[in-house]
Amino acid sequence: MNNIHDFLEEIPVSVKNFIPVRKRLFVGLLGASVLGAGALLAGIWLLAINPTRTVFDQILLIVLTVLLMGGTALATMGIGGIILTILYSKDITAFHGPIRIAVSLFFPIVLVIGKILHIDSEKIKSSFIEVNNDLVRSKALRLKPAQILLLAPHCLQNSDCPYKITVNIDNCHRCGKCPVNDLLELRDACGIKMGIATGGTLARKYAQEYRPRAIIAIACERDLTSGIQDTSPIPVLGVTNERPFGPCFNTSVKIPDVEKAVNFFIAEGNYETASCDQ
Image 1 (tube, rainbow, N blue to C red):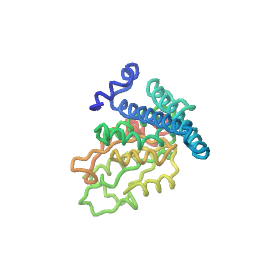
Image 2 (cartoon, helix red, strand yellow; image 1 turned 135 degrees about the vertical axis):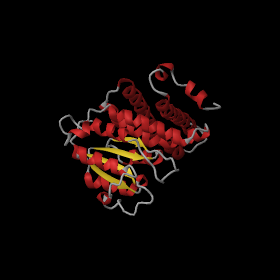
Image 3 (cartoon, rainbow, N blue to C red; image 1 turned 45 degrees about the vertical axis):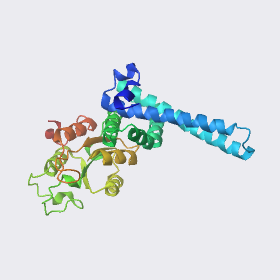
Image 4 (tube, rainbow, N blue to C red; image 1 turned 30 degrees about the vertical axis):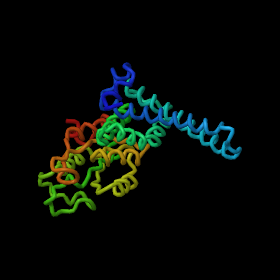
């Protein structure tokens, strides 16, 4: 395959007609990684049955084949679960485990295949975030505001601001020069929890402290991808930040996108004020 367009053409028409291209990219690469694992299995099996091998070597190879076969079979089910969930916008409980296995086991291989095909890793991660958000939206989650955690990166804060907000977000003086003020207003209006994180370690600390039932995370594609996987099985809706000045410096975010994510999780009647539902 010479380029991504050739690769995408390999995906069945029935899937292409219903899955948008941004989501199709990750699903297609995930399928390719499982096919690659199948080819590896065939190679290991051929080595195992080779009569020149010692009995010990053959037993080891057969055990390895069985383990890989089980993982590959579950991952294949997981891919099927992802496709069905996206197509029907309906959560299928039986596929939760296989989907997690497919993503956790094969995501690194997806990135390797993408690199071989000269596909930008940021595009792959963006596609993964889109797929993840679809999987989360398929769940019938209706939560109280206090069960929702909004995680934002510290790079949203204006770089000239003298007030440190990573330890205490309420140190923000709400001057309106950065999106933090708007996010705090959303927090106050809806009654959700919120934290400003400098990285994955602090984000995990907030998750352990607040024990949310759902997370809305604002970050770049790289941090969102790792965060979604780290916090599994807690559902995470990812909102990609905007980087007009480059990564990790005076970034921004579309507040309506964040508000939409909050509104998805909050059950009707659980708003602390009417402004959250505007």
